[in-house]
Length: 76
Image (cartoon, rainbow, N blue to C red; front, top):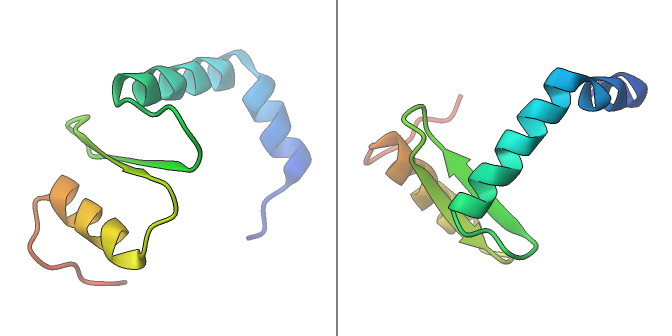
Protein backbone atom coordinates (compact mmCIF):
# COMPACT_ATOMS: atom_id res chain seq x y z
CA UNK A 1 0.00 0.00 0.00
CA UNK A 2 3.01 2.26 0.02
CA UNK A 3 2.76 3.18 3.70
CA UNK A 4 5.79 3.98 5.83
CA UNK A 5 5.61 1.99 9.08
CA UNK A 6 7.87 4.28 11.07
CA UNK A 7 5.91 7.35 9.99
CA UNK A 8 2.61 5.72 10.96
CA UNK A 9 3.93 4.79 14.41
CA UNK A 10 5.36 8.31 14.93
CA UNK A 11 2.01 9.91 14.02
CA UNK A 12 0.12 7.48 16.26
CA UNK A 13 2.38 8.37 19.19
CA UNK A 14 2.03 12.14 18.67
CA UNK A 15 -0.49 13.96 20.92
CA UNK A 16 -2.98 14.49 18.07
CA UNK A 17 -2.64 10.84 17.04
CA UNK A 18 -3.37 9.74 20.61
CA UNK A 19 -6.38 12.07 20.74
CA UNK A 20 -7.79 10.63 17.50
CA UNK A 21 -7.12 7.06 18.64
CA UNK A 22 -8.91 7.68 21.95
CA UNK A 23 -11.86 9.18 20.06
CA UNK A 24 -11.99 6.06 17.87
CA UNK A 25 -11.92 3.80 20.94
CA UNK A 26 -14.71 5.82 22.59
CA UNK A 27 -16.83 5.65 19.45
CA UNK A 28 -16.25 1.89 19.24
CA UNK A 29 -17.43 1.53 22.86
CA UNK A 30 -20.46 3.73 22.15
CA UNK A 31 -21.38 1.47 19.23
CA UNK A 32 -20.97 -1.63 21.40
CA UNK A 33 -17.80 -3.12 19.88
CA UNK A 34 -16.56 -5.71 22.36
CA UNK A 35 -14.85 -8.37 20.25
CA UNK A 36 -12.60 -9.05 17.30
CA UNK A 37 -13.15 -8.69 14.45
CA UNK A 38 -15.61 -5.82 14.71
CA UNK A 39 -15.99 -3.50 11.73
CA UNK A 40 -17.48 -0.08 12.40
CA UNK A 41 -18.67 2.06 9.49
CA UNK A 42 -19.55 5.63 10.41
CA UNK A 43 -20.96 8.37 8.20
CA UNK A 44 -20.47 12.14 8.40
CA UNK A 45 -23.45 12.45 10.77
CA UNK A 46 -21.66 10.06 13.15
CA UNK A 47 -24.29 7.35 12.56
CA UNK A 48 -22.78 3.91 12.32
CA UNK A 49 -23.17 0.27 11.51
CA UNK A 50 -21.43 -2.51 13.44
CA UNK A 51 -20.51 -5.83 11.82
CA UNK A 52 -19.20 -8.46 14.24
CA UNK A 53 -17.24 -11.53 13.21
CA UNK A 54 -16.14 -12.73 9.80
CA UNK A 55 -19.00 -12.04 7.41
CA UNK A 56 -19.59 -12.41 3.66
CA UNK A 57 -19.03 -9.38 1.41
CA UNK A 58 -22.78 -8.73 1.21
CA UNK A 59 -22.86 -7.72 4.90
CA UNK A 60 -20.36 -4.95 4.20
CA UNK A 61 -22.22 -3.80 1.09
CA UNK A 62 -25.49 -3.62 3.04
CA UNK A 63 -23.74 -1.70 5.83
CA UNK A 64 -22.38 0.85 3.38
CA UNK A 65 -25.79 1.26 1.77
CA UNK A 66 -27.34 1.83 5.18
CA UNK A 67 -24.91 4.50 6.38
CA UNK A 68 -24.83 6.24 3.00
CA UNK A 69 -28.62 6.12 2.62
CA UNK A 70 -28.37 4.59 -0.85
CA UNK A 71 -30.15 1.71 -2.49
CA UNK A 72 -27.28 1.04 -4.90
CA UNK A 73 -23.54 1.66 -4.76
CA UNK A 74 -21.31 2.56 -7.66
CA UNK A 75 -17.77 1.20 -7.39
CA UNK A 76 -14.98 3.59 -8.33
